[in-house]
Image 1: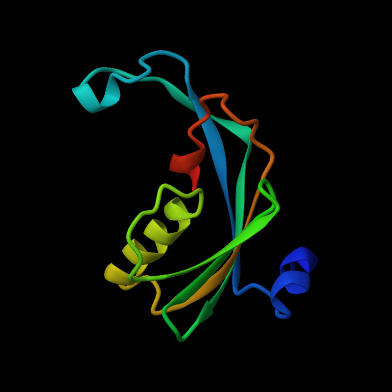
Image 2: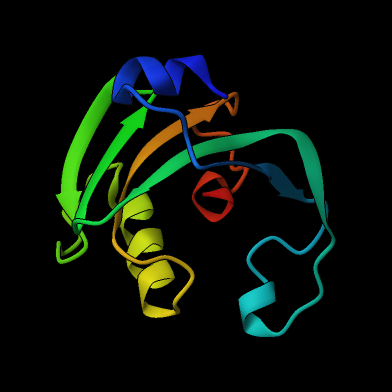
Length: 122
C-alpha cells in the first residue's frame, strides 16, 4: 500500500503500476513514418496508484507538480498536465478495462524535458 496515496485519498489504492521511461537509441521520430527504431527501457519512470470509484469523477494528484486536478470522464482536453491521465481513463472505460472514475496518484523520477517519453509511459 502506498501511504502517500492513503494520506491524500483516505483509502488504499486498488492497483499500483510502473511504466519505465524509454529512449530511442536510433530512429527518433521515424517509427510513425515506417522507419526503424531501437528504443530501450530505463530504470526510471512513472508509478501510478489508482483506486476506482463508481462516479465519473477523476481526481489526479501529481507529486511532480504537488497539485491535484478534479475532472470527469466527460471532460475535453484542456491543455493541462492531467489531460494524459484523464484520456487514459476515458480509453480504459471505452475498452471495458475499468468502469467509472478513479482517484489517481502519479509519481515520477523522470527529469523534465529530457525527451524520455513521459506521456507515453503514462
